[in-house]
Length: 110
Length: 118
Image 1 (cartoon, each protein chain N blue to C red):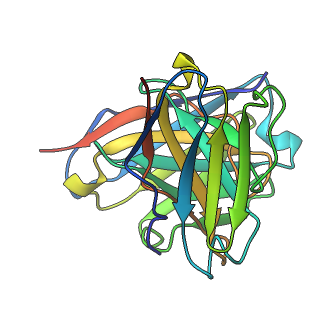
Image 2 (cartoon, each protein chain N blue to C red):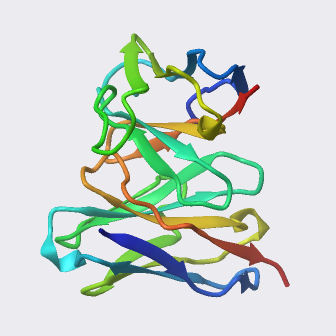
């Protein structure tokens, strides 16, 4: 199972909105509403931001939202803040009790 | 609040077995209803799901690692990862995590670096 495809990097200025894409296939992202997103500051524990494509865990800012169209899931961060600068990873169920991650996207807040 | 922490040798000899333990505080594995996972990150690379074990003991593994991996619940508050016949390609930061569902992880441990080298 190949890793999901994410852009290597995205950037935005404080206050702006950015979107990170996560592209898979009709066998994974396109077939299941089971995509999650994780924020990872190096050296710290990764943190879930979105699960089941659109659901936001308790305590996660409403500035983070998820969506999906076809074989591509997306994470949108609105009102960008300096603290949002981190690596972001998507993850999808791919069937047969198996999960696969994306390659990760480095978000830079300019 | 549940917290997880990985522990184990930071250096493993090639061809040997990598063994890590995840200690769970603020909750119990035996309370049921959760999936207990291992995930790794190769240096400078993305994340790779290794596998998980359900509270009942059922386990599921990444097909690419299935022949070498065993995840076990070792006590009320610990679960383990054994990865056999390791090579330099198994050098990575290893994370343990809890899954409120089978398809997402929350929370995670901070990870532990394991280097495979002679």
